[in-house]
Length: 266
Image: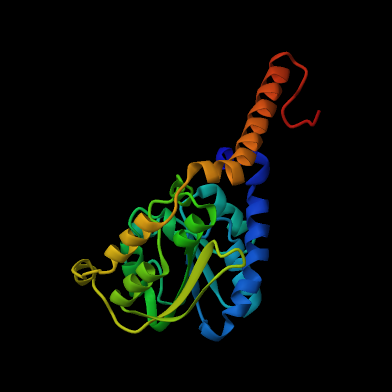
């Protein structure tokens, strides 16, 4: 993703930067959701460096717990006072995680290989009337904004969602949607749903989902022009990526000839 955006990963995605950015971004987000959030233990799945939970804790003062597979990011979260279990949620045994009042997954659902199992897991680990807070990429808005279908499909996104498909999955898996909306750029959508019924993994697999024909019809009707995308957006990105590659190549050559040392600007 760093190369796709023409960025230097080591400088742009440090644990400190990720933490501070997530905390700053999500504090006003949670303030807006205050009427829909319960008091009590709040778990985030895919908690990264803990910035989201730190922002949540600042707003509500609740106990928080992160679940994050990256050892480096989990350790950084712990260093910031955000209790974190370094694991995939699928690997957690029975009784490791207590019932929660809120479960959060912000910009992580797109990345899951089996988001359906996560929704079942969330239902199981939420107290009755507990809240599930999700934020995912708004696939239709991104595609329509850029006017090019492949731009809405990211290399690290296994699944894409429309508001209708995400709502339907939640309603079929024991949740009732309370509120939903989009962020300032309308590139991400959020949904808050409360647990209103228990579901089993077996029963969830037998649910019938409808509405895909409408999504396919929308995809077929949506304008998708690479030339429009190229001249409006892609040339600028390609120049940025090329600039990044040239800088890296020059840096490697300077290191090779002893004119530059790692960790020292010059």
